[in-house]
Amino acid sequence: MTDTSIVAKDELLLSSLQARSAYIRGNLFLFTEISNHPANQVDSFSLSYNSDKLLGDDNIYSLYLRTIRIKADTTRGEAMIIPCAFNIEDLVKKAEKNHSDELKFRINYAYSFGKDSASINWKSSDVFTIDLTGKGK
Image 1 (cartoon, helix red, strand yellow):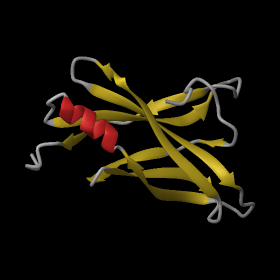
Image 2 (spheres, helix red, strand yellow):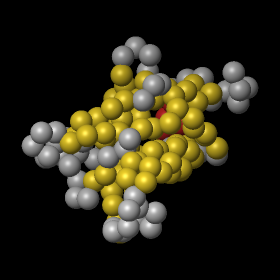
Image 3 (cartoon, rainbow, N blue to C red):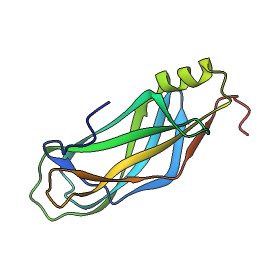
C-alpha cells in the first residue's frame, strides 16, 4: 500500500468517482472524472489496499485510488471521464478463501490538497459490492 499521508510528485485530484463499475475476470473497471484535464495529458492510475485491514463488522475493505501525471499537455483542459481497469484478483481470492459470498469495499480518492499542499484530503465512495457466488444476486 502506498503512503496515503503524503502528496506524490505530480499527483492529480479527481473531481469524482462515478458510482458505476464492472468486475470482469479479476479486473475492476472504474470511471473517474478529472476537471480541467488536457486531452493529450498522460496519467497513471493506481489502486492500493491493505488486505489485512477491514472497516467495521461488515468486512468492508478500504482501497486507495491515486492519479499521477506522467506526461503534461499545455493545451486548455476540460472535464473528462476516464475509464480505468485494475486487477483485484488477489483481493477477490482472499475474500473467497474467507468463505465470503461477496466482496465489499470503498474507494478513497484524492479530492483536494491540505492547506500546506503537503497532505491530501481523501473522499470516500459509497460501498461497492461484488457478488462472489456467481449467481448475480
